[in-house]
Length: 332
Image 1 (cartoon, rainbow, N blue to C red):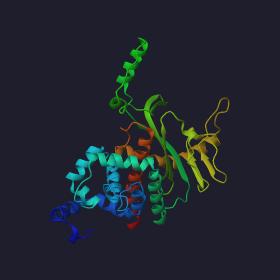
Image 2: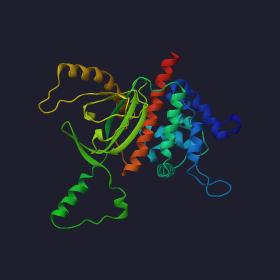
Image 3: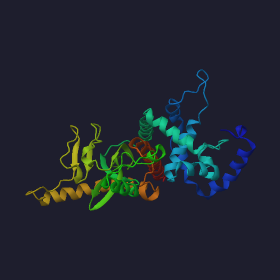
Image 4: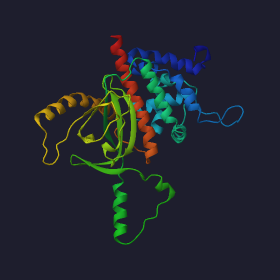
């Protein structure tokens, strides 16, 4: 939007932002690192409010796409996202100094539309195309790994249900209460620790550490049940949890071997595992950035479909974060 199209209030806000920009705003780099306009036709496909059909005009597609990226770059709820967009100059600049800020319900219903129409997959694929066009194609193999996404187990509710069952009683929930009960989360035990919630399976390329493919499941599903490998992968690096899981033909298997009963690992196998782990462990960077930098290790939504689209935007935000790092290195 040009200055001539800005209202007086928007022009004043844009002038005030100049100082923020001078202090160093990383969002400027994230805003310019991809072509957001290419998400427009994808997002608009879920709305039916054109001149022919009528209907209430929807929020600008770029505002929605950039808002969802902001949400996961800063780990914000829908309500917090609305507040920060109204309050922070850097956020206003990122979405384009719009005259009005969408309310929190707009974000909720927009996600629902995108997920139910399967458009979230098209958004992800468009990002991948842009990564390839920028010269970041996966050429040195891929890494597959998985990480838990914690959720509220509702232990107080589970205790009450257990007590009710013990006394032959049944607890009746209101529709409002049912909306806040997690329907798809499950328990899993790993290395003696109990986890509840979901699991995010990702495939990264070895060279650039960009996430190329994602799949969200309930936490109890074993890692080996999900294979993200395709024929296009040259090599696939995986930990011992994937031992024995086949890969597509012509993909070099770089899965760490696991000792079995009466068949301990030989020294040669241990050495092979060590060499693989030196590369495979680099895949932990994505989970480290998502959980520590972006504070994205927890989910508050209650169904697998809703967790899946939020995890997609979370991985999209990680890719934007990583892409800025890669572009800075290339310029240097």
